[in-house]
Amino acid sequence: MKPLLASAGVIALMVSAAACDSPERLTYETPVEMAGTTITEEAEAAAAQAQETRQSFQLASGEVEASDLIGASIHNAAGEQIATVSDIWLAAGGGAPMIVVREGGVAGVGGELHTVAFTDASIAPDPDTVGDEPKVIVQYTGETIKTLPKFEQAAADDYRLASEVMGTTAALAGTGEAARINDLILTPTGEARFAVITPDLVSMNQVVVDARALTLAEGDADGSLILDLTAEDIAVAPEYPVE
Image (cartoon, rainbow, N blue to C red; front, side):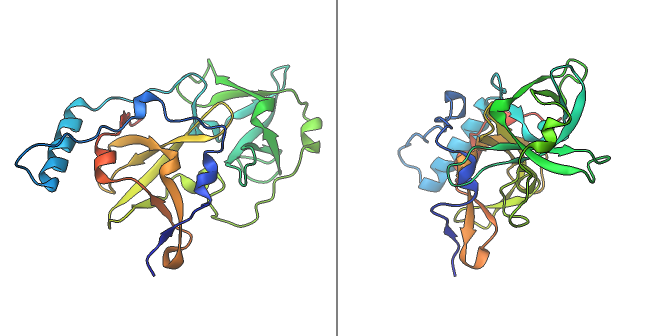
């Protein structure tokens, strides 16, 4: 059976109604029609031109890489570390994304998992770790954080956690090609607005695409990700530096 794009796929939940249209920095140019050329030649010419004029992607104010947020220390208002960020729950059914926090445990193992709303957390660059993990501050104490809702995942690898999406591959819709999903760029309220991908499984180059293009396949490919973009879309996507 040919894989079908899920009409309400799990990954589509990453961009809830709170996510706005992609900024101008992520617009895809329409290839200009050139007389006397075939469609294939037009696409190749447009891709070549795009490579020469490709823009570099810059994080907007308040945006954060999921890979930086996961593992970050959580502090109370007094500056005391009370927990760590275990993961990002990307929400479902119109729900709000949540920060999954680990209270207790050692080196990311053990302890209890709870959820904290993004609206209850302040996320800012840590002056002691510039370019790395941000600093997360919550208005909770070490005791009150234990009273927050416990996190229990319904099923493993259902792509509702940021860590499940990152590091996986997604098939380009309608082709046999695949791209690697390296990271997600989150808005200040936790929605996955962009995905950082390697367009093929050989190169190290990274580009940024709209996270709404990620959907969950159904049918024989049930449980796998599909990137609903063309090769031409990816050819003009902004570059993202490899750290």
